Image 1 (cartoon, rainbow, N blue to C red):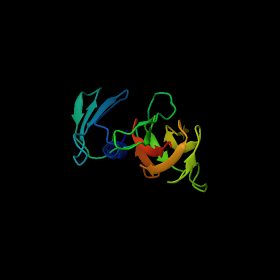
Image 2: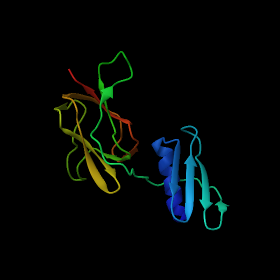
Image 3: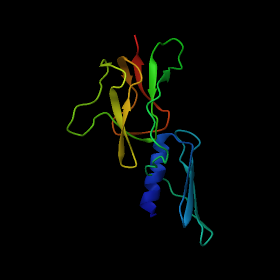
Image 4: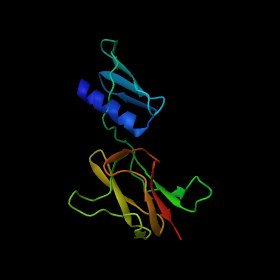
Length: 162
């Protein structure tokens, strides 16, 4: 892994909101820890064969999940004053609103959806996973920008089930 890949990894972790990422390979180990949104990530590099700790760098690259893809898990919004359902990301990856660059978006604010309708695609490890709605309703808000990294359980959409 060269310095550019490490810098891309640090940038990705900083944007994703993850607090800690560990990456172990045959010849080295990297741990990236962040303490707050605006803080620069703390990075520790260790090279196993030599036992040296390498200098810190400031930047990251996409880290993809190793777990199988699950269906989207909508949950009630945390604010008790609202009756909206929050559709959350079932995996870590890159959020896309369109199936392809030349195709229209899956849903817009105000779109009426049925159970099983595709809301978006999340790319993880070069696989495009369709995220389907668990509820029928109307899209009230899209909480993530197109082509943005998303974390597991990150809110993606607000749906009005009425």
